Structures are given as C-alpha cells and as structure tokens.
Image 1 (cartoon, rainbow, N blue to C red):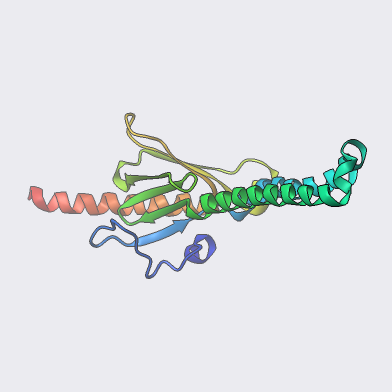
Image 2: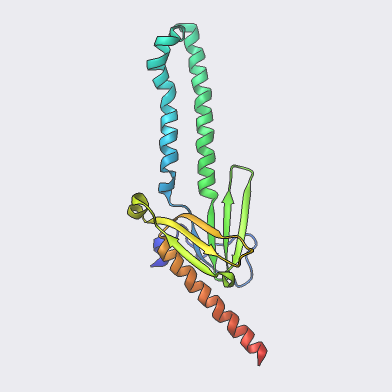
Length: 195
C-alpha cells in the first residue's frame, strides 16, 4: 500500500548513478504537483499582460501602436515577452521535475536542481538519523495530503528537509522502519565480529 500511495515511479527496477552494491531503492519522492499552483497562477497572469495592455493601456497612452506599421512592433515585443515567460515556465518545470528524494535501504539522497546548471546532491546514512518529524500545516496541504519531513542528524551535520512531500506521515513511518532495519543489521554484523 505504501508503494502505491507515495511513489511516482515503479521502483522495482529503479537505479541511479552511485548506487551501492546490495542497495535497493525503497521510496522515490517528488514534490506534490500542487506546489506548482502558485507558479501556474503567476505565469497565467504574465501571459495575459500583453493582451490586457493592448486592450486597456495602449489605446490611452500609446495609440500609435494600434496603427499598421507600429502594430507589428507591438506584436514583436509581445512575442519576445512570451518567449521569456515560456523560458521561465520551463525553468520552473525543470526545477520541479529534477528535485527528487531517493530513499534506499541504506541511505537517503536529496537531489536538488536549481536552474539548468546547478545541481546539489546530499546523502545521509540511515543509521545516522537522530530525529525525524513530519509536518502538515495549512488548509491546502491538509486537503491535498502533502507536507514536509525534517530529518535531524548529528549536530555538525546538515538537517535534511523534504518540502511538499506527498503523504509525509506515511513516508516518515517508512523511513523510521528502514532506520530500524539498518540499525538491526548493523547490530547483527558487529555482534558477529565481537564473538
């Protein structure tokens, strides 16, 4: 049930660069699609700007743009503006699509894309987790079932935060289960060496 409710990919054959031997992908998480809603509203507003300007502002202030030779200039400027809006929308989509959290039976990987040419990959060994908290705050996150997960490790290490995760409580429980399995496996391995 957990696989179907929170994974966006089939993880049976999911692999990634740098995957360790005997490391199995358990969860693959992305931001909830509703997190794109504010960007979509802004882009829709910017797409309407040239039309609204042509209807309301141009006739009052720059009426010359309504006549033949200058009308083409306004169309050209509008097309350039639409090109910038399209590029911005594409950058937002790339950032959304390439931000991913991969949780395996050994570690957690946080892959964060910022623009086209800036990618940060952080990893955390599951055995180093000290505290894990899930948080669903607000009406929209509660209705659509998304929130954040904070993972605290040793004091000198970074605090991991997974934002806008679908079903954060279920994901937190799965991470805790994997943490316990990793600790048990660690105890078993070191217990054999002590004897």
